[in-house]
Image (cartoon, rainbow, N blue to C red):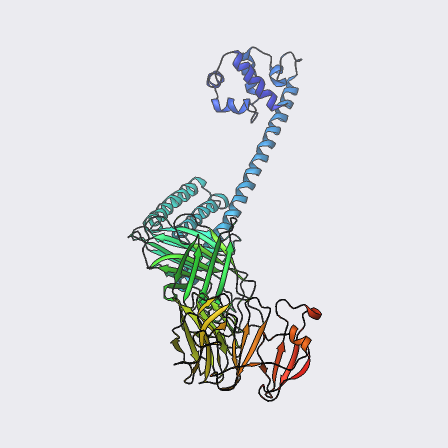
Length: 637
């Protein structure tokens, strides 16, 4: 006997009679719930009820048993048998459903046990271990949410796994327990859990977690650094209270920019840092690490650059250039700084993760990059800049990010740097913003005497040191153009200055100093007749000692040149010629000045000038061992 078929047939017969389940139940002395179970196939009527049903619906008992009209009649024994089969089928189905419900309840109970144990242990560890060590939940309401999970799971455990003789009383007690504890927990959460607004963000690679708490009443912001999934500690309270929204921007996976406004409307900046670019032990300064020049170009070719030197940090961006002194820089951790102008944050500079510090200098090694980001509540673009200062292994010395070889100089951002030994760099005082480089003859870097000639506001100045850069003197040479200067010792030096130049001719004089450059006296004012004495525009002087010196006199076209020698300290000059054949004298001229070897030998290169093409434009070398009185042929260069 098919109980589902039976139930469907009963429903059909009832509707044919236009009867409700309640009306049918009243006619046969049962409840409408019993009729509902029959029609859904969940139960079967007692055999004694079949006759009553057949009478109500005007059908045969056998038709009710078969669940359809027109079937042959069955005997009483068959009816009893079919009813027993139907009852057994319904009973088995009911038992199977009850087993499923029991298994489901047990599963829910076991899962609740697991969650209860985890949350209970979590709260226990927090209260006994983490809280005494200043750890807090990343959100205040988490404590109460976990409490509620404990309450709910404990109630589910009682309802699903605990059996009592009177389950009704057990259920009542459990529900009362849940309601009371939940009300208490929610009351505490409302009172304590919403005092702070919390911000939790992760870096793009989820390696670091930013946790901020903002007091809704005071606007006080607390930064939590050492986060452990749900917990954080090492809190730092912002100096200024916050008014309005907070902007966060991850510059790298371990650097997050936090921008906000205080209650007076002033822009404020805080940088959360989580990493290190050194050995993780030593503290270092970011400004020292980024010494040098950094730059990048936009898609439109506009340059953004950062120059870090002894003056400070110069930012050039959008055709605007700003200098920030080191006093106006604030460092965060060891990987970021904020630049301020009039106490307003303007830029954040971050060391990117490809930065590696040199253990000797604490400067970023070649290949490292930095990120520059403007401080603003609006959306800002973080720009990655590459280092424009070469930092190779052969240039170990630095200052202001400028690397200088031994006995050499460099000019960066209007500052002159020199080095004597290739291991330390000295900054020369003075503003050289108008100077890009020095021409030969206008500077000298030697231990005995170091000097530079530079122009400032149209006048030439001499700055010199006699003690390897420890002390410097500056002298206004009261001249508009110094052709070249040479010192033969600490005190004695010679200067060729031009006062006017026209058509390859220069009017000027040779001056001499005997006090190291402080004062100068004219010793020679040119070649020619009195009142018409001149030099050539390309003339250069060179002195071997206080008395012996030379000067070149090249034509403006570079086709010919003469060489003159002085043996009285520049007071007088005579034209000098080496012994050459008549043919050589028509080819070779005196464009170069003699050089003196360590043994005192003078060597002179005689060349062909700008029009020379004889034998490939070669030159001939002569030498003298008697201070230029006589010259001997040495060979071809």
